[in-house]
Image (cartoon, rainbow, N blue to C red):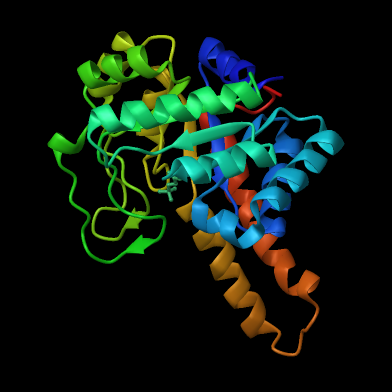
Length: 288
Ligand code: 13P
């Protein structure tokens, strides 16, 4: 299945496909194994920092091997590419989806750069999926001790979404509707503006709507967001927390253990559990 076919099926059957971010090979293994056990399509994401660690080509090759082995519908997405060069690097390495994040640029420049990436990407691989972004998404994928402000003026508007999609012809759009990256200890479950999702969906009905900052969002809001048209949900912080907590525990409970595959196994299991919980919540179980 192509990346677009994977999300079209989700759109038609009203569920969302999870994007789970990785920077190491064992995180990839945990996510794919969870998806395989639940027979779910899955999206692997790497930010520029994460891909700097695992390697862009390495992430592409490893994901391809898992896809061949499991036969699951798997998308590999270059999350938050900030420059054309960064997007090109992922396209050339064989990523099957690119997220260009020009949301901090003036909209005309965002449109111009997104179009340029689409032109190059589709000339290399007509089936590649391109996600644009509009609105100001605050935070980063970690635990925030200080309150992250959520401002209505940062939200994506239906008018801008319509203009952006008309001009760029991007396949997907990441929208800002009360979501933030990371988990805010002072506001751990930010609420989403469901009405705004509905308005955006109405303005760009065929575009795949993407929710970033899925960590911490309540189950109720996730379900409602999917009902209103969100088909891709990005999760990173909850995976990072599960991984690092278990790794810390594993290191302290057996200080004499030196075998990496034994030290890492509890962390892999913890990541798997979070991924399974999200797959069930997103409704993508048995949709592979
Ligand atoms: P969280 O870290 O809040 O889950 O967000 C992940 C994300 O949106 C990656 O693009």
